[in-house]
Length: 87
Length: 87
DNA sequence: ATAAATTGTTTATTATAATACACAAATATA
DNA sequence: TATATTTGTGTATTATAATAAACAATTTAT
Image 1: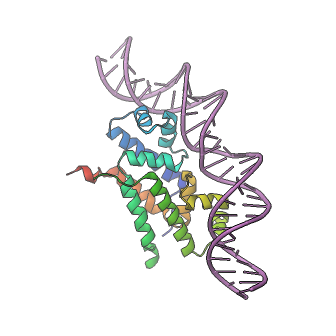
Image 2: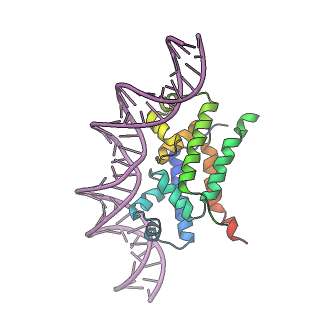
Image 3: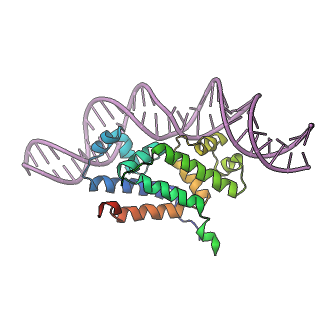
C-alpha cells in the first residue's frame, strides 16, 4: 500500500481539526490563543497548514482533551509491528 | 476522565517511538538523518524528547510508513465527537 | 445598512529549532 | 583488548517559529 498522503496535506488536516474543534467550543482564534498563552498569529498560521512546533500542537491537543488518546496511540504503535507488512 | 499525561511525556514517547522504529530498520541516527535530509543533531534531540517542528515529526513518520495512518486518525477525530463527553 | 466581532495579512523583533562542526563517551565488532 | 561504530554533548551560526502591534477584509449580529 503506497502512501499517497503528503506532509503538506497532514499539516492542512491538523489545521482543519484545530479550527473545527475550536469552533465546536465556540472560541475565536484569540480565545484559544489566550487560553494557551500563544499568540493569535501562531493559531492563525497553524490552522492554515503552516509549520509549527510540537509544543504548539500538543498544547492545542491538550486543550481539546486529545492528549491521552494521542499518547496511547503512540504507545500502541511502539508495541505493534506495521500491520500492512503482515500480508 | 482526567488527562494525566503531560506534554513532556508525549514528546518523550515520540522520541522513543522514533528510536524503536529506527533500530527495527537497523539504521543509525546518522542513517536516518541522511535519509530525511536532516542533521543528526535534530534526530538526536527529537529522540530525547526535545521540542521539534511538525515537519521533522512528519518526515520521520513518513519514513516509517505512519503518515497515512496518522492522516486517517486526524480525519476520524474531525468526524467524531468526543466519546468521553457522551456519558 | 450599520456596527461589532472575527479572521486574514503585513512588518519588525525575539526566541529557538535546525545546521555544521568537533570531540568525548559508550557500544558493538573484529 | 584493540578498533570501529554509534551515541551524547558542546559551541557557533543560520533559518525560521513565535510574539506583538496595526490595519484591512470578512463574517456575524443588531
